[in-house]
Image (cartoon, rainbow, N blue to C red; front, side, top):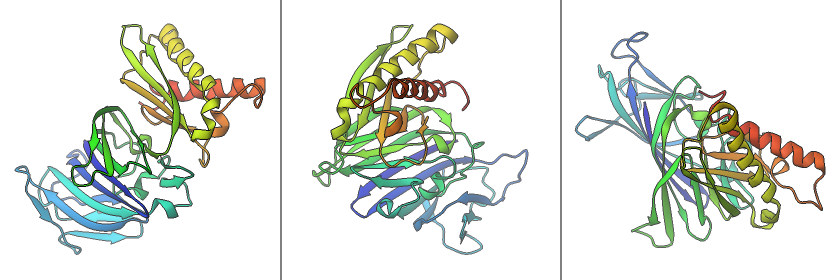
Length: 304
């Protein structure tokens, strides 16, 4: 039902702690049923069952705790509980991720691509589109110099310098809307960008930003114009007003799709984002406008 994540990025390794608030679907399963989590290329560090009072019980590998396979993890140690929280800690190596699925490093940034089955390369999870959860707290932490920009789904609710290491900083994001895991996104790195605002039909101000590698910032203006036109058109045609406080687009050189409609944090291939009159044709401009509109419209259409 709910997911809380703590993502700590270091050079060569990223630590991901996930707390899953689970509820048994009693229409198809009985108390004591196994919990099957997908997982791929993860180094497991801990599995804990969190009680209602907040205390944690470590689960050990075996028939009474959990069992690992090449496809993930089966948790058997939840007992007869129909609601519970499960905490896992894993380590991943995005710098070595050449599949461009899950969290990977590209150029100057760490970036995710979770569709179709990338989230299982990020943490243990029931990585299916029918599993809808609210990501109530996603904390991203990294080195200030290496990753001055930290982005996640939803609204930023907190940020600051890490108390135990002033060379590192963090940002916390909250998405109030339930979504499947393939719409989750994280971006962190040395990004340049442009910013603007959009005033919705009801008078709310939405912060807009388009990011890229610093050398490409002079090619982002058309993407911003296209985004604002798309937001206005969806309101005028269907009465659909954007429902978060911020909307970010990130252009990535190494991306295995054209674009991805992650909630509030779209990730685009640079080929469908960057344009300047001396480098792009009319067809390029039209195609960028169409794809940015397509991904924006997914906010209300096709994923809910």
